[in-house]
Image 1 (cartoon, rainbow, N blue to C red):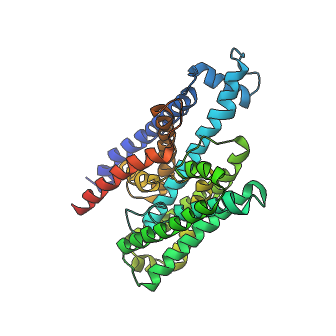
Image 2 (cartoon, one colour):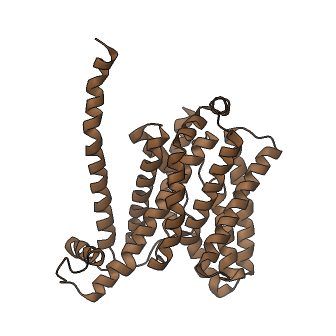
Image 3 (cartoon, one colour):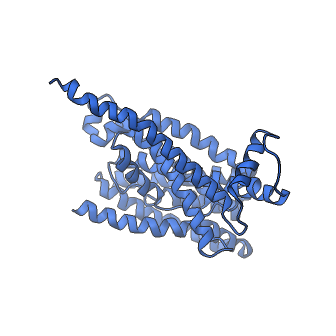
Length: 351
């Protein structure tokens, strides 16, 4: 029996299963979005949720049987919140997958590497000290600058100390994160006391301030950066094997790694600007994605984006339900889950 004949059944089986898997993921995703919109201080039936959404996208397709108040809750408050959660989760998860590939470190994550702290520093600078001198773009722009500076600091310190090991890179990132957060705390201390409470709550993470007018900014950054990551997936595959192998395949390793870090800083900075600091999503989600689709980054990148969005939807649901009607900062939820996952990962790696 030939190899092709042996492999044929498994290939056919995979071809049959793939559409089923896609359909299941789509159903889970739509069910999660529906539950997130319908859940809150005021519960809203599923038919009302989809009636409002369909009428907004395709006017007058569904007979209106709901009040304007419920329509406003769905369209103006909860749906933008869900969309922002999806974009933040997807963006941070894709960035985490990229960083784990280019550093060859399963613990790499924008939060642990200090990139999120840099973004928070820039956002706090805009919110408490510089003012919105170019309008709504001020916060994401300064957050990106902060994230980029933190990233360049990590690379510079790693190079200066000749710490080429993957573990050393994470340790350097943690050290930079502490330094940048100390500087951010000084900015908070020197800022307007009345605004400090709001900024501290924002730093803990949340998507409750989502508005339609703001969503265009994270979308404008996430869409091209996610496409870039998917386009560079073969190079990310090569980077996981090692620098020498990647070089022999014609990859300019230092330049590509710098490009990946800049993209990571851009996405992380903008997401932090609109959601605060969301920790550990970029660490956990790529590992979960690999459990489903293996190590090929042509599948890891899109599946990480999907699972990251799902995870943030449910993290936000939990944050809204635990101390209802108040909102628990979503960073508390991701921190608790991510911290436990981090410990499990360390134990798994040691074994």
